[in-house]
Image (tube, rainbow, N blue to C red; front, top):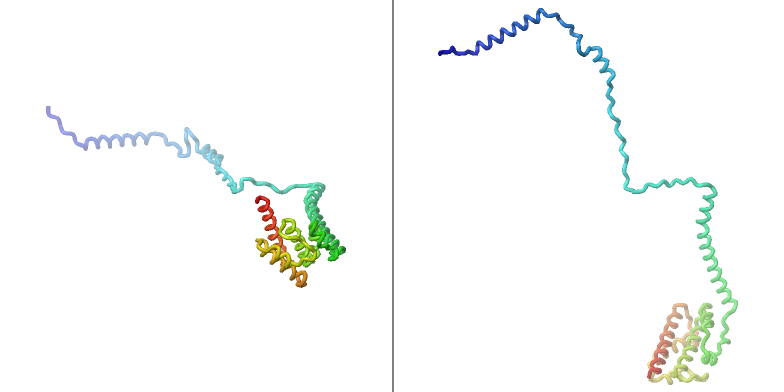
Length: 240
């Protein structure tokens, strides 16, 4: 059976006929108003649009962060009575400190006045008695505080003679000279030190050379060193 070929033109023709029929039917239908809608009226739509007002959300203020972990409020509301009490508590230690400082100054002043009122008497120095019993520390301190360094050196020398006699290095006699004591110490390790302090004693006591505080400290240290050597010699003799 032989069929006739199909051409695309037939399909186009049928489509055109259908459009013509639709347009013809629309011409006979009643026209609808442009501003009416059976489902949602235009007036209602406008009302709804006016009622809907969009308000954007308010932005939250950012809280500034600080590096300090604690934030204290130092504003204290104190009553007058509390303020007075706190002020007194702060002033009492300060007042006590000032009182102590003034007391120390007054005590030193009185001590100096006592020394000035009772001057050191050279005549009261009994050499023989002091060599036997020893020089009182208060007497030596009185000579130092009054600035009589020449008298203090003499007292140091008398105490040295006592230490040498007690250790058996010399024999004391009132009429012996310093040369006699050097002769007794011949061959002893203490002789060089004794010669040094004897020269100081003769210079500042018999020679009347002025002695200041710094010079006295140097001489006092020489006597202390020699006395320490005497103590060491006693220990060596005891063990021997």
